[in-house]
Length: 473
Image (tube, rainbow, N blue to C red; front, top):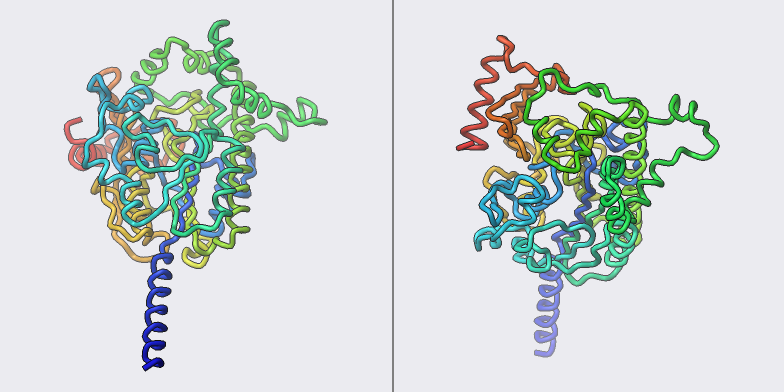
């Protein structure tokens, strides 16, 4: 009898331990997102002017994608999309304007119960995850991370963030966690043109309100010690981009956009920066990216030291890109590739085969992050039905995939096709459309909208735009 009781207790204990083990089979998920990093700004992407060993470690120990796009190439709209799994244009501000830029996005008036219930944090809470966020936020009030259930580590997006995230990772955890690490750089490159063309009052405000960013920028702009100016520009400083000149027959909407901001720094940079200044912009942008990489390294070191590398999915990306001299533009907003195409890599030791590079599939960070994370967390997460889980692609499994992808912007919307065609419809200066062929002209130096050979492709892209992605627009 005592033996039966002992055996029954033993069986119960095994079942309890087995259940606990099953609960912990869901991986920890660390989502590292930088700010304003374009797809080419990793040394693993083939860029010889930037050194990113930490980002490369994620890519080389898992999978890196080369055709990943932000839903909108501006901070707040992109982040709204990541959290909700929807296009930012799904939401409206208090003046009933679509959330297509920072001003409208941070003023999103309300969010429905449906959005809350199908948001990324809602699905993760359903799956039993602890939610933790540190760094830059830039969310509207209805989507403030604490309201959604996140514990905030810090609002600093620099070294303090890396250290606090590392501390959290090293701590023993009783349940799986989702940790979003929101690093602010290389966003500090924004302040170069803003400062260069600021009036005295604006400059004073910058110095008061953005001192850390300006200090980082100044450090990034320094020429290395012991190298003379000629040697620096001949050997070290990145050259002008292949598409430095303005696109042939560029849409008038871009000119309208450049004139919207009363500070006029975008317009003045385009017209007044010398080639040397543009090259210094590119130099500083690379150095700021390396600052972000060093913070990523702190996080990866902590993960390895915690012994949880084989129980943790790491996803790395950025909220949008940066023009960095392409088409004589800096900042983001417009839908040129440099602004909308972003880095994306994922690593889970023992689960994702290392050394993969996917240059085939069109991926949307804003639409696809939610179903992907949900898939790994063990819940069927759906927001916008056009979002897709990347898990089959991570793990080398066969799956059907989209052939086209929509993206939004402040002055235009666009559709990309797997065959390399890219269709942009502008609305800031009346109806304008441009058709690019990224296979034939990867730098978008011209367009093929009026080319007789492209008329069938143009009509097909119009149909995809109107029927599959942006009905009514």
